[in-house]
Image (cartoon, rainbow, N blue to C red; front, side, top):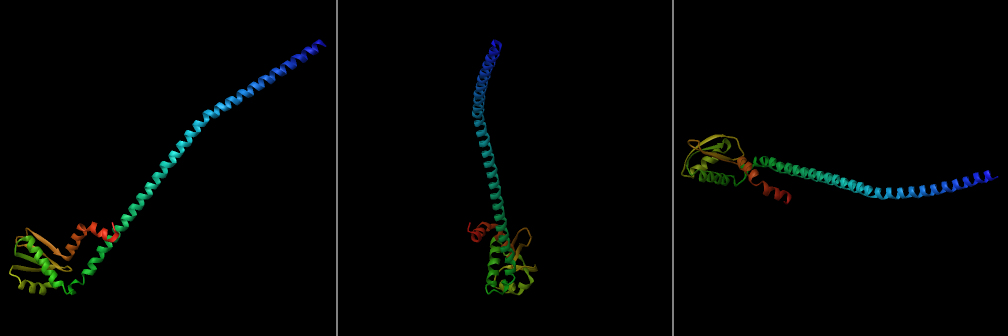
Length: 194
């Protein structure tokens, strides 16, 4: 029986030893897990922060692109409206000859051109439809003018020096074109309140 007791004692001792090893292993495993979790938390936090930052950058890029696209569409629409205004103007100029002030307007256009050229010995290029009116206007003045009816315009005239070195374009269309360029900011302000 002594051998049986000895075997039993060895088994009990081995069982205790196994239990101790198991408990120590379990405690070590729990400590390793806690350490891993402690090390994992900053990594997870950093990855989460990186992901948040990436999402924020992407969001800002998308917002910026959307704003730019919207700004471009607004600018395009404003330009189209501006162009429509100037596309309509020649249609309205078609009836300017019927206006009671047309004769006076022609005198003003001639006066401006002569003042700019500083010369009364000039050639007036006019529209054939205004020839009679221009002859009446020129009979009232004291200049030496030659009339050439080679323009087709809504009204006005082009004035050349005899040597053709200088010219003043003073048709209604040329004035409209000049106004479109010069007064663009003011017109945009009137149209869009900018």
